[in-house]
Length: 399
Image (cartoon, rainbow, N blue to C red):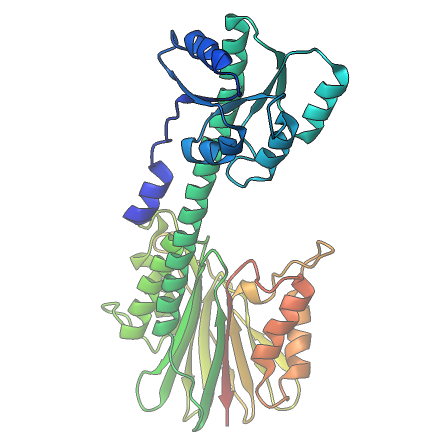
């Protein structure tokens, strides 16, 4: 959270004093009310004798309660009540109607038009002050609540902007798709509104071996994203001393030692890491708590590639194993995070890994558009344009 967000959330609540506006054409009434309120040091008083000036006076002076006479020349008090309630700045200001008569019909009409209270003038000073304080306190609470809400909205918008910029930064670290050659790659990355911890990458280790990896940090928010970027940079730069990055099991073991959750704010992550030997057409891989990758072979069969390893960061000195498979010509490999299949439906059921596999099997031959079409499909079954988790899907095609 930056300084602006902290300021928006911790700004002190504005204090308001009680401000009473009396609208009455009789100067004598104005003087009597002024004397009633004079002993109250926290109460400011303004008198308006001209009903035609009532609205602009109230607009400029910003009272916390208006005392409004009903019987005045040219403009009657009930019409003014209607005008107050139609004014955007005055519509919530408490109105205490003052009348010379106790009439049920007049009372009912005043309340129907938006008056908050009704007094026969002139009331006892103690009663008048009690009602002024009661209505002013409610209105001041409303003003403070609205200001706190506006500050929260501003803070949330600033935070959303920060999250969007963080998501843009994470996306800028992702590799460019490879459109030509024996290996072709493409991917789809759509962060959730909370910014999760997904990231992925690929690169040639040497002339024969191609590494690809995808990780998913637990939780959401900037902390998860920062850990994800840190882990991604280690994998991209191969910055684990003594670790052979051609050996997926060694890579997971090295990552586990470097990113123990006790040293990273109790955050851990899952990881799928593979190394393709282009000369031997062999893929060696290791996964730590991560969903299996799908290898869609040219003959229409699908293999799920995973190893039974712990997630990264949970257990020091954990042992990690790897597996290996042959990759036939025309095969496609899909590596993804759980946000690609753990998608809630409107009926409160969840899309499954089996459904994802079936979808990719059907859509993989549509000319390479299955990544975009899958996301659109998930938006539809989720019933929203935004999914609850990051959507990260990496595709590798083998010529």
